[in-house]
Length: 186
Image (cartoon, rainbow, N blue to C red; front, side, top):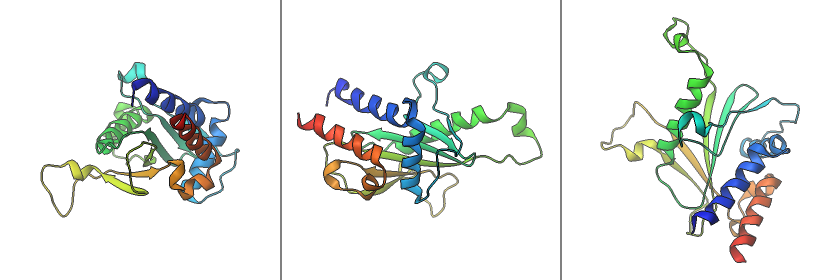
């Protein structure tokens, strides 16, 4: 798949859920589909996407602070990438840096930080099972019963021909999936 082909998928995904005039509505639709909730447009949603200029090529597709309690980091991928947990670790560390002043981390008072969630929406040509979980610990050189650090990324196959339930629950994601399918066929 060419770089140009990947670029249109990425830019459409980012536009739909992060930058478009209906991005908040689209993002809430996605959030509601993932969490089986019914948050309305009146719910506060803050776009907290990493800025390329500040972090030199470390950017993510979509991240929002929803109702001041959960960070959703969503990436679209057209190839299977087992390193997404490492990338998400970088993203969340940089996002947390933006929330607190340096001296707050040295305070005796424990910081309350938004709970992160990580999702990859897969729309590539390679066969890939429905939903799966990528774990940071899968990359560790030694295996243990417990890890001092774990990060899990839920991978959701959104290829239109896979009829994933999330496509029925989130109209903008279904439309995106249809668009990618149409471009791929033509």
